[in-house]
Length: 249
Length: 256
Image 1 (cartoon, chains in turn red, purple):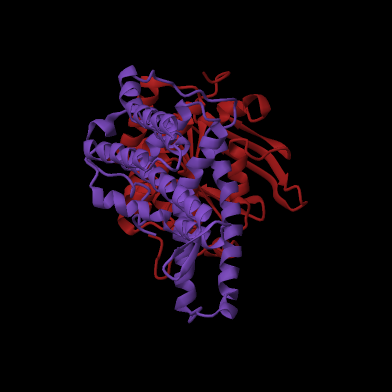
Image 2 (tube, each protein chain N blue to C red):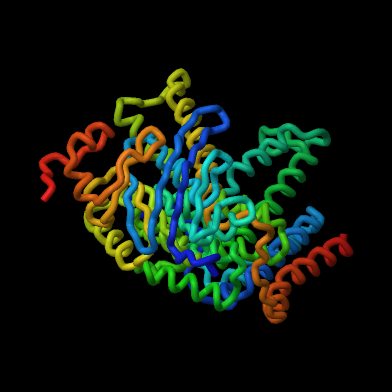
């Protein structure tokens, strides 16, 4: 399916800049290359432009300078539909993502938009729910689930589209310790190229061998997560801090 | 925010019966036709409404919906009945004396008309929701070719009604935890602010939901849902109910 020789799960962002229509510029030339199967944490303080960046990855925002390519496909009007299939974004608040009356309907929403019907659609829904351990909840209403369960269902709603890149926006927020670990186990088991937007530094350490720090619309650091977290000055300069009492091993 | 406190299935009675198993679109059409037949029945035909009520009770018995629970559901109608109570006092001549009161005869007829038809209509809808889940009702509307935008609006209303009321409950608790205790009209300022904040929040949530939908490939032309054929047996069984009410209506018109 992927054009040229680019392997599935490749992300290439080149000099991406963007200003909102009100003139507020948020991204000032972001460069990022992610290889297939890599898990990368995008760290940064509030207002660094992380969410704006993420919304460029599937063409929700665009029109600024620079380019984004997913599996070799340059994101633009002609490719946006295919790009949205390939890039699955799990948003921070599951209540924003889950809007259908039952879990099954919601997980089917994406693949139905892609044109899947009948038995094939059901198969995708069942598989996506099994991947997050939520198969038993298919016929329940989202508001009957706990927050952790809703986050897992939210992940299923994009996994059913068979993405090559998974983007998780603050995946550990509002989760209790067990739900947090369970969600991490799911992410690790998927083996997909994964971008994790977070300021939960230990979650980044647990899940992502590589981290980048974004601040004021630029990538200011890129390297192995343990190295980045050991650099106290770098963290301090970017309003990041390890939890109290934690010392990097 | 853990677990769910809202319940969009509160109206549904979890039993299995022939009525529960009927295709939902048949039940929706049958309910609408039944209500139309009741509304068309002349208000003077007391016996006709008695028969309509008997038909509904029969359906409820077949559906194994507990009558007391069904009756309690129908109480939602009470505020609307209050309006009907005023009619006999506000209506025109001729007047009739009932004890110390002088009541308008057309007003009395008007009140009776509203009360009886309204009650039977509410009872019929309560029976529909007791035997059909909310997702099924939405699917029924879709199959009945109700415009997709309208079905989508109903879907959002049901889903986000729950989220909004949970939001509102949390904001209320946060308010009263800080000593707010609105008892008098001049203390509604905080409440009004809450309503305003809730409006802004909902508007912003609307935008986020839409972006999340776009991210899953929404908006590339119409997505046709697979329409299975509704079994004829389902239609036949469901339409018996409005047909009976229709006969009652015709008999009442002919008799009057």
